Image (cartoon, rainbow, N blue to C red; front, side, top):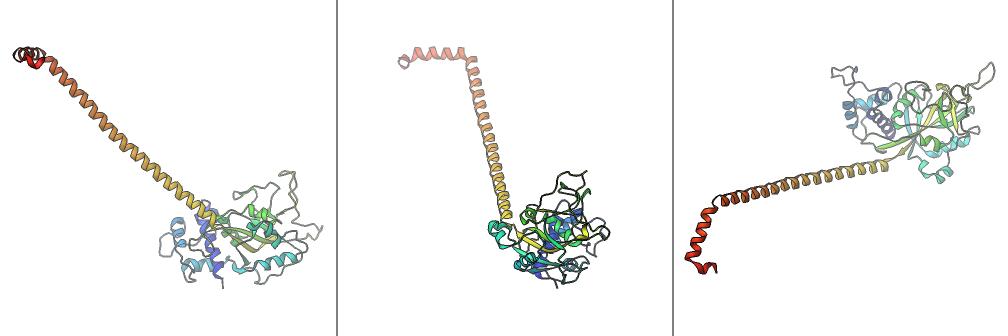
Length: 338
């Protein structure tokens, strides 16, 4: 049985994948369209699918057709909320692991403390996997929109493929780190499910176990950090783990970080831009009104000048008559002109 918060993570990761512009590659597997539609999945309506997922209420009802598909898909992992201390104990018991996950690291870098931690159980593995001593632990950070496909397909070596996103500075392989802060720097936040009880904007860092397969012929490690000289002549930093084989990396835990504060700041900034835009628009409209009013006043002045000019012309045309009248009145009523 999937725990509610585990279901929350799955729905949020699917939401982020479908909402992303790379949805065609990161939203895999993709929920099928409703059976009552004529579209059989050849041309998926991502907008409608996203709206359907966002409309799922909390807590997500198990019998909802999308929730049921998410939980029962053949590659969906079981995600169970776990205590961070349990993961710390696992790291402490790994004598051959260079990775560190402890309270001391959180003391110096409090932002590295995850909001929640989840244990993953994959459909093809036992519910209580054994942790061999011949394993190394590492962290893998990625953008949140990639989490959905990674949870279903695992970490893949995508070097020199169309899906490669961050390059391969130190050669081909899956990049992990023994330093949580390094992995966290590659962990980009994404907007998830609007009804999530965890948070609307999340980050994720994967805790992985790396198995060391030995070649029976020469005893060499298949996952040794060998770098093709054609790719890079420099060695990777000590904090990096580069694994060639995808089947050698298994996701054990997922660390979730809630980044809602950044989302709220972004929304406030957008709201502020909206208000500023409305203010500018209002100011522009006022200028137009003033311009229109100014044009009206200018027209009145022009018409007034034209009237004065017309009056002047009329007076000039009748000037002789006016002069005779002036002389006549001056002769009859001289006292008026004293």
